[in-house]
Length: 354
Image (cartoon, rainbow, N blue to C red; front, side, top):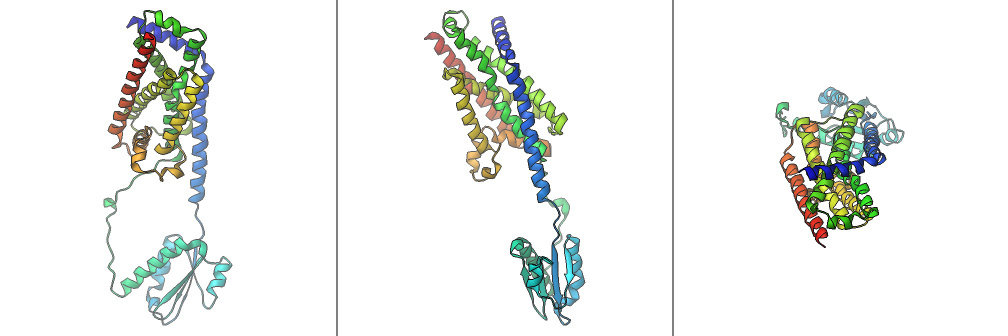
């Protein structure tokens, strides 16, 4: 145990020499989350802006709908729509001039709707409302009473919460880059050859590197970056006693996974490039970014990404306070950690024997 402690301590010193890399990783997380959340929030605000939607209508004196004229107008205005009554204006001209988006002509025993081509969805909604009114007047439709308490609702995350969580997870998955100075120094100092004749086992060497990488990653990403996002951007980490341990487990799992590339390939640059490529694709499938493409993947494909259960569980903890994905997430991260560690130890020991 003492040998492992000293090996991990020496590796930790090597990593800490690259302070710039650690600082850039922390600041990169904060800057990316701030940029993405700001952009996404702006898009949502623009989409949610109230637009002036006007409905024009003409009602003939002997129309059967005249008895419901007041109720119809009040109902549309309650939904934030402007209702304007016309006498003999041309509906198409009104729509063309932008005075109204939809025009309803109530004749004696029927009605017709003229709508703006750019407002087809809204026109269909109004058509559906009038269809139900028509059915009720003919005794063919009965109103349904709905108890609001019976409606299940799911709170959606804010832009800061969503991107703060998924991007923190993504940057955590890249923390194996902290191992770069260790493997570069091993190549420069020909430590690999010395390691083969040393009394230290491959297991000690592997665990020393993994321990140092995990410790730095926990400090830099799990606590510094996440804490800064909470303080500066107001990111809400739901149920910290659950979310933080899950993040720490994920950090260890991704460090072990990324370390495999450094062990297998002799070139650190090639290792990082391949690791980034695989994690980028996994993030694309798992919903970390390019979310407009995310829906095109099958549920099975999404579940194969190491980010899927992790992102889902942490986001749901943030918005709902609980998640059904916690157990699958913990199980997946544990499997990745154990399998990666066993493979890493096996390969390291084999290299020492050669």
